[in-house]
Length: 318
Ligand code: ADP
Image 1: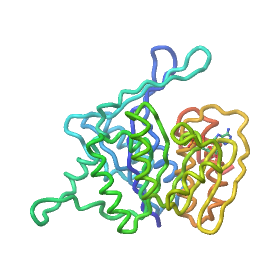
Image 2: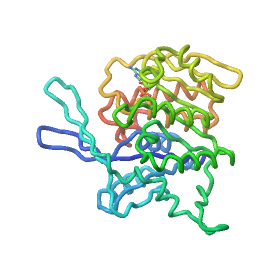
Image 3: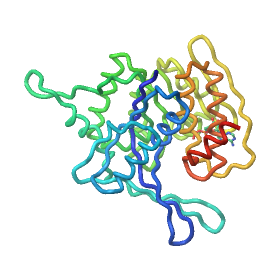
Image 4: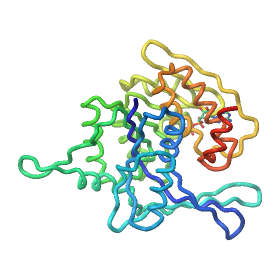
């Protein structure tokens, strides 16, 4: 049985149906990882999304939506004044999509102090946070999770990661990169270096490493990551395959390119969630990559991050 904790931000998504009319749902990179992990893992596997929301009814809606997907919400904290972040997706006459975000003051940015307040216990000379209980066997966060944490709360985040690492939790990091969320590339590289130092498994997409490190292919990605002591690397590159490097083996898994790509949102996130689920079933890295790539291939043939649950189950069973 796997007990996975995923830290990050889940947002309100407003997706344009026609001019002036929007459909509301919930989304975010870690939201997709959690949902696809739970959909593909066995019943006993558990995933907790660690984030913060507000007290408004939309936040209640997010919690209900996660519970419908059997994602555990016990690590979702309520901020006294802040609310959920929000983004809209509009499509122009040529089918080009554009995104607008309202997330700079979202509750999720304060998840670490809220977690500390909620879990602090009396100790010598005051109070200290007692950590994640029960301790998860896997802890996942992404470059987006890191970017959205209020900068003054990052030292406490690294303290939490160090505690988990030292007590045997497997640390998983996807360095997905959204330049607009960072003050500078130097700041991102500093934070990512900490993350790579702790990571037992990293799941980068080549594109995310290109701007930050000048990486352009699997070989240069491996050279970059070899500077760190990372046990397993699963490097994604769209339809160009997935490269695996782990204890005693390394290989390229080819991908069958999807002809009719509808929307690449959540390609990497659905891959990550399903890869972790398939590994927790006991599949080898190669088989888990092959099956996770099939899941990502299904996701990109549908609009939006989450393929409707029943439809998803139907396609998988075909
Ligand atoms: P990220 O979103 O992390 O940058 P990628 O764009 O590399 O990740 O996509 C993640 C996964 O989605 C790939 O490893 C692959 O399995 C699948 N994928 C992406 N684009 C395609 C495509 N055109 N055809 C088939 N599979 C794809």
